[in-house]
Amino acid sequence: MKYIIAAAVLLLGVVFGAGVFILSGSYNPGADSPHWKVTYALLDTTRERAVEHHASSITVSAKLNDPQMILKGAGQYAAMCTSCHLAPGMKNSEIRPGLYPLPPDLSKIRVEPREAFWVIKHGLKMSAMPAWGISHDDETIWSMVAFLQKLPDMTPEQYKEIVAKAPPDDDMEPSEGAAASHHKSHTHH
Image (cartoon, rainbow, N blue to C red; front, side):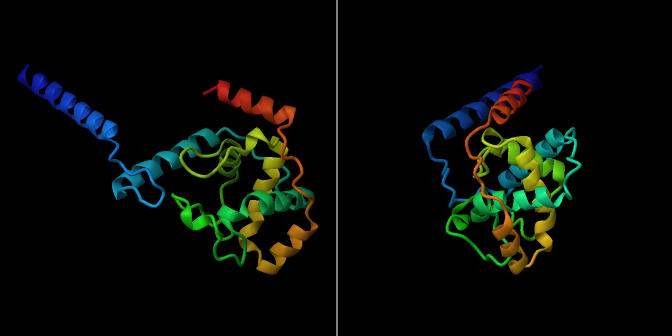
């Protein structure tokens, strides 16, 4: 019985201490003040596992190798992604050094299609990754995923060439399908 009381007192002390810390405002939430290593590791693992879990039931588009799909994705990527995720030959951007956590350089790594689709559609909390599913339909998001599968193998010249041929990113207004799909996806959480 005294162990239960001791555990309860310890738990109350931790909760009280956490409350005092939170209410004191002494935590530095600035993006230029990194998390403690253990905090970062916990958040990173939580994010990775959650994305894997939520993306696991997604059926990958059969059109990932369709040249028109890849071309459309090139235009989308150039318009919306390069400031954070870079492009072949880009060393940095004005915004990228100030982001925390630093977004992956997608010109150098290949992302798993289901996970890429989920992250592009839903975004990531407490990062600069927006939920593009609010303003883009699934077909457009799959075009970005298709392009991402090719991006790491491109030279800067190949990248510039495909972007120059790409259709413009003119679907920035939420479509009825994207808005309905976004609402539906949030009702199942």
